[in-house]
Amino acid sequence: TRVHAKQLWGNALNIGVTATMEGLIGDTKTQMQSLTQNSDLVSVTYYPINGDFTVKPASVVAADVDALVSAYPAKPIHFQEFGYPTSTVCNSSESKQKQFIQEAFKAWDKHSDKIKLMAYLWLTDISETEAQNFVGYYGVTGHPSALAFKEFLRTLGLRKYDGAGADKEGFVQLKNEAKVRGW
Image 1: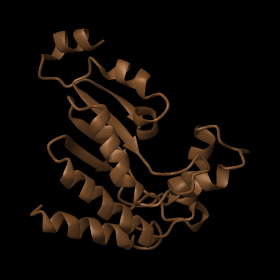
Image 2: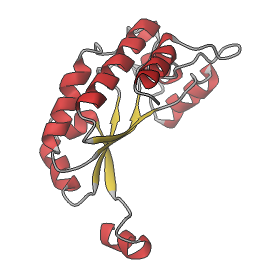
Image 3: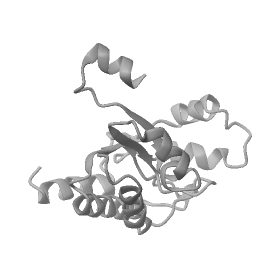
Image 4: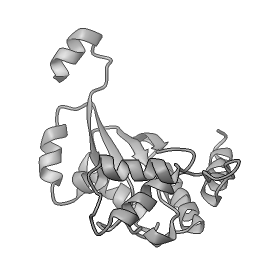
């Protein structure tokens, strides 16, 4: 596929495979390294959560990003998606999301030569109905973690869905982090 795509659109086209952080640095790391060996970049989705959709502490970001950079030293890294929910069902809060943003920027600063993109999943939370539709779409209906999965998706935004879409602490922190860096 890589060869064909570059024939069509030229060698400047960057080709990559997107995988979860856990897939890239966890038990399947060897297989992912094999899969990405001919890629131009490593594309990752990153949500520091447990298998039941409860959050891990923001302090894991540094070690996770260090492990990713160490596992793929010759490739630029693109965080295609990253985020952190705020729902109490996920054992989270706005304050924890704010801490995640702080840790993400610290990790980016440390590895700015390798990390070329960090794209937060979405700006605003999604509605209850849209979140429930995703539960069905992903086939999680009836699963013991269905509620936590729905709340994970529903509250990933940096702004609240209700009303006029007020900023969460994480969005304020994102703006502050960007401002400090002259963005």
